[in-house]
Image (cartoon, rainbow, N blue to C red):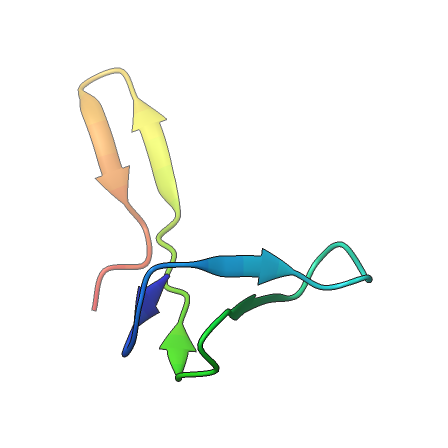
Length: 46
């Protein structure tokens, strides 16, 4: 997660949604990586 404010977070009751404690905006970024014989390959590269 990249947070505009502080790093503190909590998970909501649905056990999936994560929010910042200070209520600032945040974003979650992921990449999909394939592990190949010749090394890792990032599949979600822009």
